[in-house]
Length: 627
Image (cartoon, rainbow, N blue to C red; front, side, top):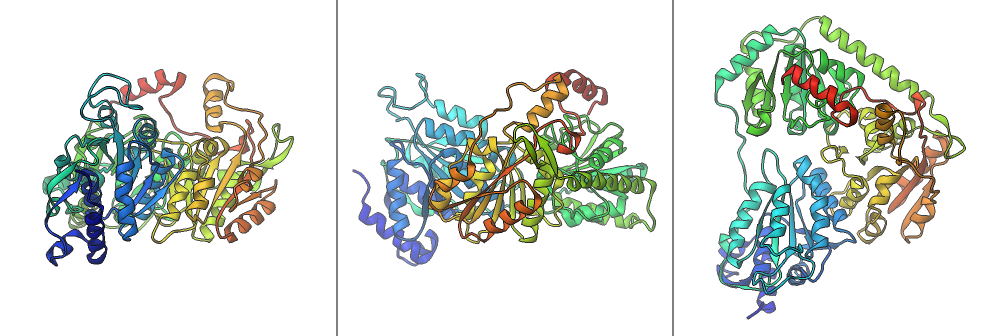
């Protein structure tokens, strides 16, 4: 006995009319207990959590789920966006949640498609972004190898794969869907560090019936209350540590994106300076006098000084990945760390640290009240610590300004003067900022220069995917503008290598009505890696090519995409940006940029990192510091 599509159509229509399952049942329009297939129960459960958008590459492993989505889309309950590549679909869903706050589900077939989606989900897993995945899986009867399953005579092979990336369940029995959906909510909507959740849907289980499916058993989207630290002694100890310190630096990560006001107030009370992570620019306004820009392995001169020289570090909402804290070597003179985090694992990352467990915003507000009661107030004069850091930031501004003032260098690839990446990125960034457009930065040299150039006054328009550094995220992420309820014009800052890894946006951007722009910075090389190779081993090796590509022609070969050439000057690039922005669709601007060892060709690297032949030195320093 299979699905009753007439009854399914009626259920879809009733949900469309009443909005949610509970309302339709309460109104007597839906019977609470009905025969429903596993596929439909899964989609109903996701609808119950507000998931109305599905990004799919259908295959033989997901045809039944596709038919359910077709019925519910016809009723106006959901909408499915077909894309050409599962990695692109994953990036799109991640950007949709990260930028716009909309939760989507990625649907794939079994085997290679599921593996592509799994690879793309590294971005969601690394950056704490909640995304659902529905992946076709091998049948439960074990009648023999299923085509495209993991070729190994073991059960649940793909489940073992996805559990290394996040959380997931095999829907081996239709009735397990209720538990799977509950576990999914705890992952995708986790108030601390969210992530991907994978439903593995065996092909033979998808059309199987739940004879008396209790529609009210399908869980709703949870509301997790903000939980603060109730141990008041922790805040008294933190206050004492501040009293004993002379040079305090606040370093914050992704768990502090809603704490900008509290961070600024805390810095004023404790005479601290502030340093951000690469993906959290704008949480504290760049113009804030205590803000010292980005710090880390590819941080700024002033940001790294503030980290290296502080005797007390206040860490807020951070995982402390290798580039964020220079592989654990950034705290060179720190005597201790006050660590705010909601996750016990990340809060205990450092030795000699005071743990303030719970929601960062709530705990910062409590500590600020404690400090005020203890007599702390904003300083009436500039301390030596603040004065030194302000001078360093002025030097950093002059350092960047010299590169902006010298935008052209002769390049051997182009056999002429071309724009440098710092100058080109600055021109595009300022244009986007004036238009209040969003900026997605792809991994590589574009990103490394980009997050040092960005000077955001607010959070929410610049997105640096630094958790996984997944090349192709920015261009693929543009697709989210075609799905979002209230899309924002977006520029994808992408290198030629990143773009060619995921160029499907040229097709899917037209298909789904994206209005945005790919800025393709072309240096025919992997600039960030060349910089590492040269710094570590004195030469480049196999990270450049001489392939001349007409990206304008490539873009314009897709009807609906506008291809533009940036030319070789700030003036011609500015005209191309304006023309791209005025186009009512997807555009691509090809920007030739310099690659070489001239000091004005990039912004440099000012921190340590445990890679290559630096490892021995960096590891020794990490153990010397003992954090």
